[in-house]
Amino acid sequence: MQKTICLSFDVEDWFQVENLREKFPPQTWDKCELRVESNTRKILDLLDRYDVKATFFVLGWIAERKPELVKEIHSRGHEIASHGYEHVINYELSRDEIYEDIKKSKGLLESITGDKVVGYRAPNFSVTQDVIDALTTLGFEYDSSYHPFSKNERYGQLGSNEKGLFKLNESLTEIPMSVWKNKFFELSIAGGGYFRLYPYHFFRALASSYLKKNDYMIMYFHPWEFDAEQPRVRDVKFSYMFRQYVGLARNYYKLSHAIMDFKSKGYIFKRLCDFYDNEFSIKQRFGELKAGSKV
Image 1 (cartoon, rainbow, N blue to C red):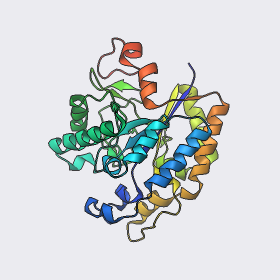
Image 2 (image 1 turned 90 degrees about the vertical axis):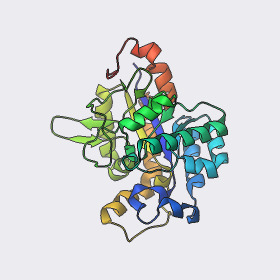
Image 3 (image 1 turned 180 degrees about the horizontal axis):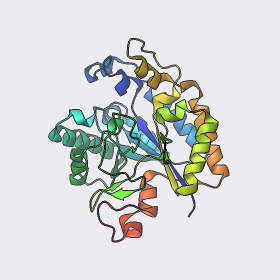
Image 4 (image 1 turned 90 degrees about the horizontal axis):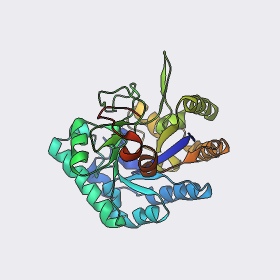
């Protein structure tokens, strides 16, 4: 089977990140400088250069204020998926609040693009059973919120140690982030701050090792991670500052290099909806697999 790389981008702005939430609660967001348009277009131009299609998990708050950006992402051939509406960690919301947050985002995105939204990613990978229940009720086909890296306290758990795709129930499939593991260590190679932190040759070695044993790799990024000129917030915890700002200046070039390296090895790039539909759809690949089974 040809190796597949799925790139995804969580479309939120610099002030909506959990690391800065104490300084920028949602009621302050309309007063902040929006930089998401220029940063997202930088990504779109990069993807166009290498003829790569990706999935964009768009925050409803952004879509409501920048519908033309959503239309542009969609018109350039990328998948539009949901990142919720207000970027609040789901553990802090009630069951009803989770449902309404996801429903609002889905409705906004579908009204802008005219296409059905089938995928979701929780803010900060904060997946819960209430999230799964809401996605199922709302007709989503896949979730990509499970990050099986145990060293980050923000990530949700699904009671599974699986690193491959698995069914959450009869109608919903989980597409987890990629994590490199051996008997002694685990390291996320899925992107985000991990990609910014690692020296490129180290990431390349981990990715190469991972793809010797796996047929696909799922990665995520954010538009603000390609913006070294974003406003700097100093009066937060050092660990939060480090997570937010490490490696911003080189991130665009590292991703460009990674795409070139993957292409040179003959790997193909797919949107998550295509990866799901064509490679791991319930009808074509899951067959009679029951909920909890792995592909």
